[in-house]
Image 1 (cartoon, helix red, strand yellow):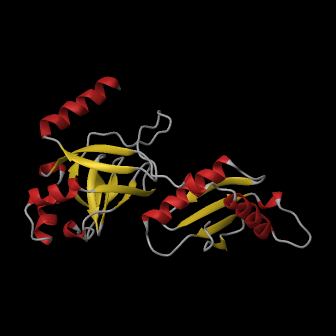
Image 2: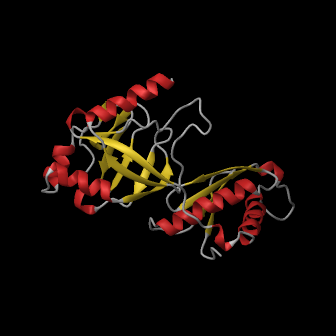
Image 3: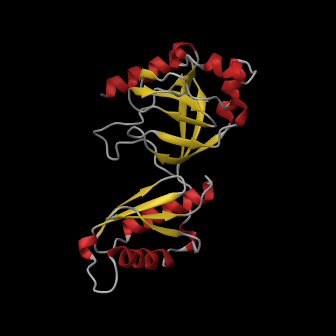
Length: 239
């Protein structure tokens, strides 16, 4: 299993595991399942795992690996390889499917018209194409709970804005290149905004604080402005 992993030194206390060079759902699933396996079966000196598109970084304490003839890196790699070899084949599974409501266009999606124009589509065609796909969460990053989603149709791809916005409202749904994502908090950003969701992607006082996890699947569906405000009011009532 995973015979083609490259093990590279990543600073004095890190090991970078390269699973491939091309963004691929199957490879990414292996990465996240390997991360979970290592977290559940840690070795002495293990600190944490950091999964990404095609790599997995393992952080460790080099002071736990003192040997006259071998480096801490070599010893830690041995521990990782031993655990990966014991991983069950059936461990590779897709995560949950989460449905995300989105109110498209208007001031919630100020770039929807631009995305439609770039691709010679109507705004409704962009919405239809965006909602018909099931997306895969490759990784979280940039901001707490920000999902990088793969699987978007090339027909609605659009470049990042030439000048990023200084403030993007939380819940904004955007497109950058052939990717789509959701801003979980108010933050600067350069993605083309096509809509906004009332779903809370990041709630600091919850455990876990993020709605989505890497390996999950996301399905968007369209809601009206009235439905958006009703769900927002519901969240505020619970707060």
